Each structure stands twice: as C-alpha cells, then as structure tokens.
Length: 320
Length: 319
Image 1 (cartoon, rainbow over the protein chains, first blue to last red):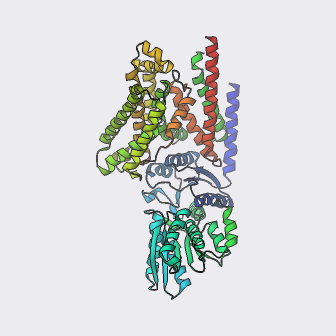
Image 2: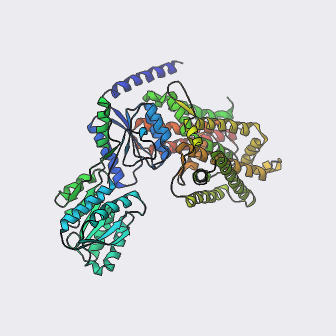
Image 3: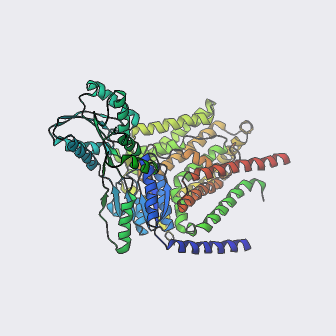
C-alpha cells in the first residue's frame, strides 16, 4: 500500500511539473505521413525548426504511411489537450469522425500540403502549394530566357494521373500556348524518378536528330531532370547551354547541377508549410482572427544567379 | 496461485507497471479519453486477435487476416458505393465470403496436410491481390449507416468516448472467452494444440475443428475489416498491411504458447492494450521515432517467449 501511495504522490508531482512547463509556449501536435521522399523528410525537419524558433513544443508522430496510425496520433493529441494539431493527411477520405472530435475539444486543426474530402468546418485552414502556378512560373522563366527565337520544348511528365503531374502540365502548357514561337514537340511520363527521366530523355534525343532540334527541357520534378541531364551529357550535348532546362521542386542535387552550369532553373516547392501554419495559428490564438481557408505557399524561382552551390549545401542538412 | 495462470498474471502485471510508469511521466494518460481511445483505435486489431488466439491455441498460424481485412474493406466499399447495396446486406455478404475463405483454408490444411503457415500465406496473397484488382484506389463510403455509427458513442465523464466499434471489440472478447473455456469446440481446440495425435485418439473431430478454427479466424478478420471500414469510412486495398503480425504479437504477449495448447483469450486483450499503450506513450512523448513502437514490441515478445520457456521447463522438470 505504501508503494502505491508513493506512486500516486509522484504522479501528482509530475503532473504539476508538466503543467508549469507547458505554460511557456504552445503545444502543437504534428501528424506526418511518413518519410517516403526527400521532400517529406525536409518538411519534417523544417517544421521542427520553425516550431523551435517560435518556442512551440512540437509533438511529432510519424504514421509510417498508415491512416490508422494518423487517426491514433490525432486522438492521442486530443487526449493530451494540445493547443493545435497539424496534419499532412495520407489519404483524402475518412477524417470526419476524428477531426469532429478535435472540433468538439476546441482544438484547431491545420492541414499541410494535402487536402481532405470533408466539410471545411473541420479545419482552421490548409497550407499547400499551387501546382498549376508552379508550372506557369517555370514556363514564364523559359519564355523570358528564350525571347522571340523559335523553340521546341520536350516535357518529362510525372506519374500518369497524379495531381502534381496533371496540374504542373496544365500550368506550363497553358502559359507556353500564349507564345507562338514555342512548340511542345514531345511529352512523355518519367514517373517522377531519376532513372525513368534518363531513359525517356535518351529516347527524345534519338528521335530529335541527336538532340539538335531540342531547345529546352521541362521536367515536372527535379529528380527526373537530374536523370535527363545525365542523358544529355552521355549524348555529348551540353545541358544548360545547348539545351535549356527548367524543372520543379528545388532539391539539392539540382542546385549542384546548376552550380556546375548544367541546369538553368528550378521552381521551389517549399518544405516550409509549417511556418505559414504557425503564423495563422498565432493570429487565431491571439484575437481569434480566422485565416483564409486555403493558404498558398510561394513558388519561388531559382536560377544560376541565386548562389546554387550555397543553396545545395543549405538544403542537404534538411534531410532531402 | 494456480501455476498455469502465471503467464497471464505476468502480462497483467507488466501492463499495470508500464501504465503506472507512463502515467507517472504524462498525467494525461490517466483519463477516460485515453481509455476510450484504447478501445476504439484498437478495435480492428483486437477482433482479429481473438480469432488468432484460437488458431495459435490449436498450434497453427493464420497469416491471411491482414489481407482479409483489406479485402473486406474494399468489398464492402464496392458493394455500398458502386452497387448501391445497403450496408447491412453488404456486411452479411462480406462475412459469408470471409467465412467460406477461412473454411477453404482450414480444409486445405487438414486434408492436404500442408502446414498452416503455407496455406495462409497463399491466402494472404490471394486476398490482398483480389482486393487490389477490384480497386487500387481508396473508395470512400458515404452512407447514413456509416454516419450514424461514427456518431454512435457513449460519452464518459471527462470527455472520453466509448464508441460502438470499441464496445463491439469488448463483446467479441467476452464471446471468445466463453467459446474457448465453456464449450466443447473450445476444449477441442486446446486438445488439438496440446497433441493432435492423442486428440484424435480421444475422439476429437479433427477435420471439423480445424475447418471451424480457420473459419472463425477469417470471419473475425472479415468483421475487423468492416470495423476498419467504419473507422476510416473508406475501403482501401492496402489497408491493414502487417496487422496479422501485430495480432500474433498481441496473442503471444498475452501469454498464449506459440506451440499451442495453452493460453487465454483474456490475455490477448491485455496484449492488445499493451501494444496500444506503447503507441500512445510514443505519441504523448512526441520526440521519439514511431519506429520505437516496433522495437518495444519486439523486446516484449522476446521477453514473453523466454518467460514461457522458463515456466514450462520448470513444469516439465516437476512432472
């Protein structure tokens, strides 16, 4: 019995300690999908950094690609009485019940990077990039770089049917269509991977007279572009000078290629989704300011002028 | 104390110590909310683990249950969302398919004399493959029955919720314990796991019992699939990957002997709760990698296997 009493006393004291520690800053739970890609790992480390900067105690839960783990994590956060919950939902369906519980407990939820099928009442806001805009920014750079000369563009598409592939194609193609001197001569899927990007680019070069009639390459992801750059070098072409390149994501390896003069431009898909989320949250907690239902992150363009070597080393530490 | 109750007691004591230690660190763990979450979030695992307990008690193993959960989810979602069939009808059809599937596996194990490991491995590939062929995408289910179930809970003081699926899991455990310890079928399962040859000589209907065991396991996995579809309001072919291993883990941590013939359904319940506790602790901590769950479960499993060896060696020496 004596031991039990001691245990109870200890538990009480621990409870007291825990409450005083929590009074310093907000406690925010973050349910991440997993670490399936370099970008996702970077998003996780940037979220941790952003939380630390603001004195937020971040509770991190990696769902290992499983929705049931995400639901468990969100329930755990609610039981803990956190001040807010960030979720990067692994699938779009099946969130009504658990987000409803968060709402009942008056805990605001912010979606990162992906959306859900459900009532917008269930969350405070969502932070994501505008994929159509990303494609348009890439096209805008190319149009400006080439000027009035005729230019045949080849396109490496992402995985067929995936939303980034559809949207990044639409944004780019629509912008290019406005300029008569541009023509998209070939377009094929490279599945977002390095090896497939190389393979498809080799095919393009063979079909286009050893690459002589290609003026520029557009890839839906930097990974495919890194593969395509290798293919161009293997064919004796100079990527970055003979053939211009523009792609999307801004991963370290592309910056390395840019520093070597083998790539021209990339549009950033920022891993910093948490920064805008924390800002919206701070405003909401302070005086109840409701943010817009969808916060769009900036799609920043990087070229060879933007210190690519420095960017490459800065990004490597994020876990890409 | 009755010697044979020792592993069960060990599981219960380890759970209590672990819970007390965790609660000592995070006072929020002692709340009706967390207790309610334990039931709701582990409902599909618990229901599967009841079936798995019978299989392991009989000296077998069922690797197909995770795939059956995935298949049932997709099957139910297709019937409801694409064919417009009422959920209750879809549930009955899904359970019938799962039961037939289990019976076929049981029959193959008995008459073809193939180890259960191989037959249920084939069953796992079959069920997972069939689910993915039907639809590789997650199929959302929007039906008033599903909306009603997601809102069907009893609110405990303190904000915790006992959901319908959580209550269903508890009911299945009670039912499972009654079948294991109070029926002829239950006694046959223990006899089969203890020694199949002497069981047959004693007049245990081996064929019927084997088929019924795998039928029960698959049917409960089917029920778990329905619960999972209620839980996520969708059917997805890749859901519940690896749940068969979690279920086996819960059964062994619960004190059931992997070689069969000894164990308790109640122990499995504690095993499931212990796994839920580890996961909840890691979420509460918020800095540990979620893969620590696997490491802790691995250590626990190893401990229990060791413990069983020691207890039964001591018993054998005495006899």
